[in-house]
Image (cartoon, rainbow, N blue to C red; front, side):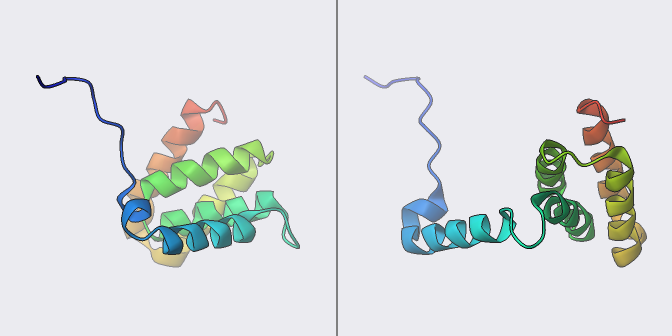
Length: 108
């Protein structure tokens, strides 16, 4: 008898290279945590870098984290501008996605 219940999602990186994934997660946490550079500014950097690499999921993640760290509308606008000016017009669709996320979160 087969079950129609959905199977839990398996993280294939964790399942196949657990040591690497654990090391990466530790480094990621250490790098993005509060430190000499306050977390808010690290997350705003993440916003700019996400625009540069055109990663909409990354952009939404860093917007939410920067908002939790009390980033302002003006700071988001400048971070998105830095991303656009650093990587050019190909990033404009990603920047627009960022503005949609900010609107959904009530920042705009």
